[in-house]
Length: 302
Image 1 (tube, rainbow, N blue to C red):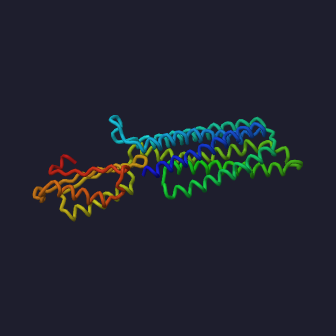
Image 2: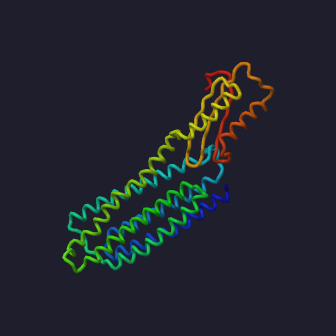
Image 3: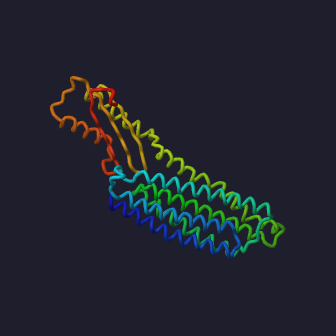
């Protein structure tokens, strides 16, 4: 696990360096071209870089052991960071949408299309390469942070691709009867992009809040109960109660078993063997799995 965690941190560091470059690149070219959409693209990348630095810090924290104050570890920080990241991107999209509407109402804006097109070509290539690279790597790592970072690269790539197409079309319209309409190209792109992209971080925020609020994943709950139903029939348990939650990459499972009065217990090893059997059935043993199996003869304890 430590090796995979270090590899995850390496991928995030590489992403941060490239994102910072694109962010600064976008802001400079946005100023040169006079494009609010390009500046939005650069600011979006810069914001994403800050979020990636935060994600890298949390990824390191998750590999450390718990403390006396955080005895269950730091798993709960992961969904908090994901929620914060998503909310920042949502607010950023809302601001861009309002700015686009304001610019349209003011009559649009003049652009230097040569600078804008050059920027879009370079950044579009970089973004799609980074997205494909991280998607391939994450098939093995299965990291929530890298998944979010890959989504961010996809968002940035789509933004830049749309910029490239729109700027190219507007450039072709120069010198024609439609040239007066080219001033609306930049705010129109910004309007549609900000309105469409707001739903991508929204999905991340909703998923993170489900974990923050300890909403039990349905598939996880059904799997645990299916296993315990088999165990109940096999060992003759009187009753059981199970509780499951997923927080970041950690799984917390509590199982309380009511034994009948005549249940044969020769030693503590008998109960430990049942615990071991249940743990093997559930699977995923490791520091990311917290499982508690208790036994009682009184139903009031469950």
